[in-house]
Amino acid sequence: MKNFISSVLLIFLISSCNEEASYYKISDFEKVTKTDVHVHIHTERLAFYDQAKNDNFKLLTIGLDSHNKEKKVREQYAYSVYQVSKHPEEIQFATAFTMEGWDEPNWLERQLQMLDSAINNGARAVKVWKNIGMVYRDKDGELIMVDNPKLDPIFQMLADRKIPVIGHLGEPKNCWLPLNEMTTNNDSTYYASHPQYHMFLHPELPSYEDQIVARDKMLEKNPNLIFIGAHLGSMEWDVDEIAKRLDKFPNMAVETAARMGQVFYQTHHDREKVRDFFIKYHDRVLYATDLGDSGKREVNDLHEYLHNTWLRDWRFFVTDEEMTSDLVDEPFQGLKLPKEIVDDIYLHNAQKWFKIFN
Ligand SMILES: [Zn+2]
Image 1 (cartoon, rainbow, N blue to C red):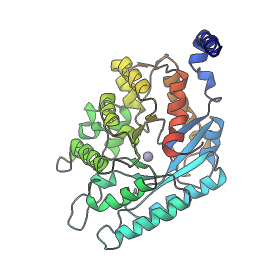
Image 2 (image 1 turned 60 degrees about the vertical axis):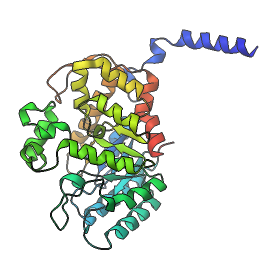
Image 3 (image 1 turned 60 degrees about the horizontal axis):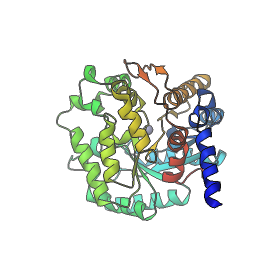
Image 4 (image 1 turned 45 degrees about the vertical axis):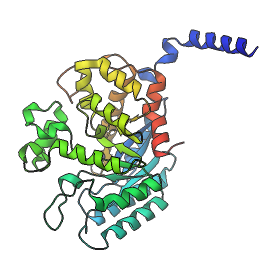
């Protein structure tokens, strides 16, 4: 009898497994609950939230050590706490520690205390930024790489407390290329206006490989650390490189923030490879954008920008339409991923990896 019921159930499932049931449509965009796990709301106004609500997005807003200043970390933390207090069902936050005072004897203790208090106040993750490895120098003028032993107690504490680290370490590989050889327009525009971060101009600084090696060494030292590689783990140029790390580090996932251009670029060249990657690693990739609000942009303009970005990416993941984007010069075709894969990337993986919005 049991077998009969399961056979009937199976036949029912197969017969209902038609186009309608397997794939989302563009028009499902507002109906489906989604997450964007990399945004920066560094303001008290609620304009970002309003658009997220309209487009059915829940948000992880992230503070970072962008100025090597504790004051700045605390300021962003305060904005995050405020945003969460207004909409705790739809916004959660990540915080950071600071490199400021690195050479002082109580630096580590101060950072552990600041993180402990932030976590007790609801911080769901801790971001490490590219100032580690690319910007911050100790009193001897040396760059601090992320595998520096002095950082170990912080990663150990976060591993013990099961608080994920969001790692923006290194930069896209384009950063080490001349502007005219970069694969995406957003990268060439960014580095043209931020020459201090354009590593092609700074051959004396650590190479792309140095950054990736330091990150991998840190992960080898901390196998229990939950690690979310921001910006596709700085391996945005080849999904095979991401796959190798995901195979090697079971507690690692990646998110797509500000790297959809590289996904589009690779899709233009080998759509099947990119599609297979998203299907095989469906439980390891989280949707994210790096969109933000610092309170300056005109509200309608901000809303339009958020909506267009989110809708563009939805179109890419759920349809097989021919697309173009100002991020890349080449046309590309949407991946048309099955519903359950889309749900993982857009919701379940945020719930699983950050323990939010469950
Ligand atoms: Zn960011």
